[in-house]
Image (cartoon, rainbow, N blue to C red):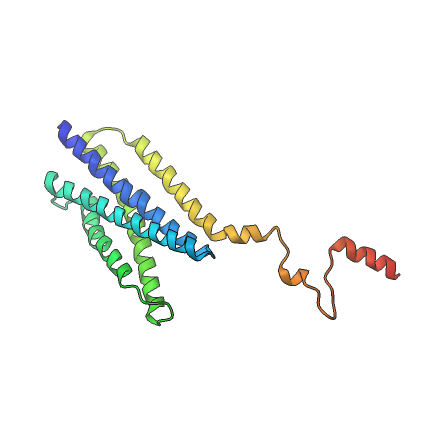
Amino acid sequence: MPKKSFQLKLHALFHWSSFGFLMPVGILLVRMSSKSKSGRCIRVLFYCHVISQIAAVLLATGGVALSVMNFENSFSNSHQRVGLALYGFMWLQPLIGFFRPERGVKARSLWYFSHWLLGVTVCATGIANVYTGLRTYHERTTKSVSLWTGLLTVEVSILAFLYLLIDRWSYMMKQGHLPVEQLRPTDNHRTYPTTLRKELGMVQE
């Protein structure tokens, strides 16, 4: 029984690290690269994305191998059935990424949408399956998983917040500056700060 408990924990750790951490981090890295203007930074973020996703796939595969070798796989519960589907789509994702069309090709838009949608779906479904896995562990061992469920929730919430923050970061930074068009004078009209316009009005009067 102690050996079985250890194997269950290792299986959970592999899938948590894969679906609950590395895959979301990979999505964040791509999000950051889309906002970057430095070619070198974009390349570094892209390669980090690739490495994190390869590591995620390998860890998830290790978790599946543990399940096949040591657990009863009757697929009588949703955790096992969803896990089987995830395993197939998880390996499909890097294959789609490998056959990436060049920029400017019409198929690029369809490829991007497919790669993005499949990646987000696999990641979100994988996180949900980690939750059901924790519940299954509790049912089999009667041990409390409240702490681990809480930690996973906090981690996912932080990653989701960072995803939203990256999307709006450049917009927030622009709020402290006037648009260039408002600062650039034209032939017929010059744009001045409010106080300067008032002073000019008083002088003209």
